[in-house]
Length: 161
Image 1 (cartoon, rainbow, N blue to C red):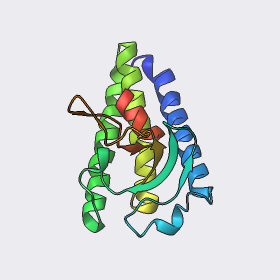
Image 2: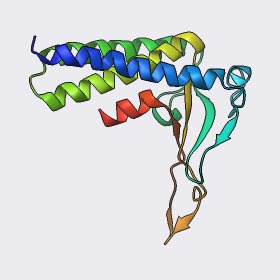
Image 3: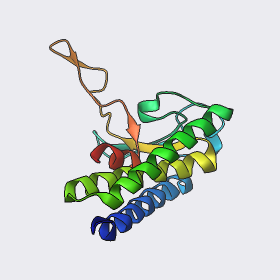
């Protein structure tokens, strides 16, 4: 074991806490109507913050970018695979010698566990950070612009890691 675990494990815990605190706020916000639309596969509520950023509650039953939507037994299979990968990354973190490797692994594991908690509790992941803005669906020079995905703190950790 290297020294990386001394700050890597606390960083994982901080990322999980930050993710779950933000999701608890979203679940409690009446404007977002999160729990009422859990069984329906639709976007729930929206809080407009600025022209480029909103809180738009949606349930993601898949993995990254909503790929592999899973229900029933497939959901638990997905849960198990992600859990095993997170455990493997944690063991890698305990052996990491480089700071950047340990930082990346800590972010990925913290994000994965944050989303696993949602998947175990609800069967879906709480997504709410929406940067689609007014330009989503527009084209500039024939190229599409905008960011269509709605995500959460855990997703950001995984992507940054």
